[in-house]
Amino acid sequence: MPSNVILIASGIATTYVFLRCLLAFTQDAKEPPALETAIPFLSPMIGMRKKAKFYIDLRLYIINSTELIPAAQKQVRILDFAPMESKVAINVMGSGPEGKKVLLRSEEGVGDYAYAILFDKAIHASVSPGPQLDAMNKSSVEIVARSVEELASRSPARLKLFERFEPGIIIMLLNLYPNLLARDSVQARREIVDAFNDYFVSHAHEEGSAFVQSHYQHKIDQGVTGKDVARFEIGAIVGILSNTIPASFWVLYHTFSDPTVLEECRKEILACCKVEGNTCTLDIAEVKASCSILLSILKESLRFHGIGTSVRVVTQDHLLDGKYLLKKGGIVMIPGPVQHSSTLAYGEDVDRFEHMRFVRSPTRKRPSPIAFRGFGGGATLCPGRHFATTEILTFVAVIIARFDFKPVRSEWVCPKTDKAGMAGTIAPPNLDEDVEVEVTPTAGEMAGKIWNVVLSASDKGVELSAEDIR
Image (cartoon, rainbow, N blue to C red; front, side, top):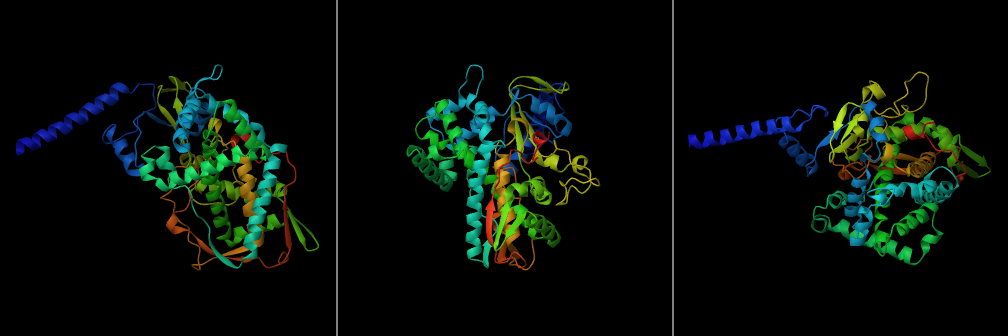
């Protein structure tokens, strides 16, 4: 018995020494310093399995320094998002064999993963400030206004502030036997694909927005055929629903749960209203231009509850900022939460939700634009951020202007987010901690008015990221 114990102990000690030596031999002196771990290689795997239910057997380079982010983002093809984007898209969208070939194909003058690389260029005009985006935003504003009108017709009422849709996305993303472990989500994906397929077969997209048409044309130009044309729409749905819904939730929660914030925010929204007789007209373009507090609450929600991480593949050995060697095949990660919790970027009150944080003021230090990762950055900057922001601001502005929320539990309790998945950039509340509220129309001068929500033309975008600041 003692000999067995000695044998096991010797084996463990030998393995430990071997792993330490392996780390020393494989770690180049020019690489960033390796994270100290109890057992090299094994401790990170155990930790990631415990927290994320999977591990990645790759060399990971984590960029926590704000100053290094611009240097990393400049190397678009060396530190490339396209390989990761393409492979993830295959799993999430359920692409067919021919669709997979399109996503992985090279193109002369572009390089590998040409579909993903050319996608942003194909849709750029339709999602950038200007007439095409205005047309899409106007349709969105009309739909949101009708939805709010429906809520008004049945208030007072009780409703849950958040309900989630995509529980199986991560299973599909990682391709972890989705037909077994995410059956409901796989079935939902089939139904969505069938609906989109009917949409395209009937040529209804020809009357769609500039974004729909440019996205469709990009697929055709790249050789996408059959049901893959419909499958490739799944990525857009994930991007829209996984972020705009929780963002809207947190803006409403942080506004209504604090009477002072509600008063300040409602005051600036109502200042954008034009009253003629019994009709109140709210121009969302005016809201975007004038409601600095509301926009600050949105950006602070994205900061405070942000969970997004920008990921890139190292396609060739590269000396980042002339200092740190990144080896080919490694993965570079820029965790948003690290930047969003930086006291250098946001001050000593970084751990508090501060609704005025992004309102420009001579008495407050302006947060670092580079450290704000609410919409990603560089090659992973969200191309639909201006549309999504208009959609969110329309919804929350009309709700704040027209309704009062009272928590059913008599007091506001902030829900936890520790069960949030990794599909989005902002953490949704835990499903079992949704906030139930009683909704009633606001009293005062606007009570009983007929509301008309519009969007006038605008070629100016809101400053949402470092790339938007001129």
